[in-house]
Length: 307
Length: 307
Image (spheres, rainbow over the protein chains, first blue to last red):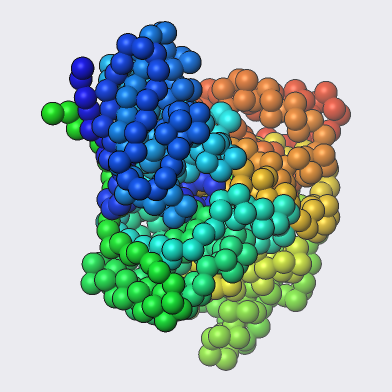
């Protein structure tokens, strides 16, 4: 039976001002999966990591994403999956999106690429719904497409890939728990119009900065007046890390997804490494366990490796 | 004494979803001015149109914009202005911005271009403040710079010129009165977060559509879920004009600035002319006097003509 390996990258949703619409893919970390077809019409999942995730298809994000796909396939095809997660669940780095998107991308390859990328996003969103209660595509889209993506609309689905200049990304994952559903609940349901206007000025600036390769504009636009002021309270050391990173030359950054990971974008590797030091120092000072990454934007998205 | 002629274009602020941040300049209509320096340190304004605007410098938007500039010039320089407005005040087509921006651009030329474009925006905003009570730059920026502009921020001023593909613009000015200050007052001070997210998805899509020359994306993004539903109630026939124009092939459109003018963007002239017919028919049916324009985007902004 044909087996493929799948690499599914970590992703950063929101990118500061683009709450629920922007996301980007990272070269590190990424999940690995081995997948093969079976003729029994069943999904069998094994995890080789030690995150104690359920292997029952109905309780595993990859399982529910695949089940959504199978409802649109001819009966009889099933999938065997061995997942090795390197993206820690609950890190805010798109762990569930990597499982969901990786699984449906691998499955689609095994089926002869019968589905479009938009179909795959649609299937993978079932995984996101299981993980966070909401069908959102701001991690799945960059995971599948690579680079920076804009989800203009979910219903109907409208995903636009945006070009972006070379950037280094420094990430710190402080090992504290922030549940996506909690991070969503603390947000106000209404926002002042004047803040919304400020936010969409920044989003427009950020999109233009990416497309025009204008680092200064990217930097000026990396400002969130709506979500970050609320959510950052859940992340110890956030303000200090951000302030010092920008002082050290980072373009800007913020909370990755709903946290607790924090990311900073830099133009060059030396700055990205200085930012990592700032993150390490702060977490050590606070006595919080952590993991850091210095990486770049992954422009390709999910990778299928055939042997 | 050296005299220059100045052409200052009409502008469309907001461009549907970009409330307070986006704007574009039109090739028609445009205001004409004749300007010269005087050594008396005074501003003298004459109007050759018949809109009954005040010629007192303190009560004329061009006058207050020039006065703001003169506070940063060496004492002694003054200006004589003859303004012929073709952009009707209160039309929602940036009439006050054309006066303010045209005046400061002409004055700057006469002074030997001592000020930057950002300075000119800053001076011209004093005119907008007189006209509408608020310092806004979403008409002034495209009037001065041409094309499509993004005002990412007013304080500090951050204006970005965006490239955009060729588009035809059809405008109807129904001759009813909508005061900018009234149009502002009927807006809610708070907006639901979910609508704000939808809006910034559209703004991001519109900016990407302009920069990537993607007409389909521009069309899909020309949606305003926050301002238009409220303000369009002030404009008789709005929904009908919009719906029929899109059915006829227009990319989309909405209220120009705070109205009452309505504009539609089209990919080709034939569609733009069909849209004009739709507008004419509707206004005639409603018994509202009107004026229409079929024009294109003005990519150059204020033009100084020296003889």
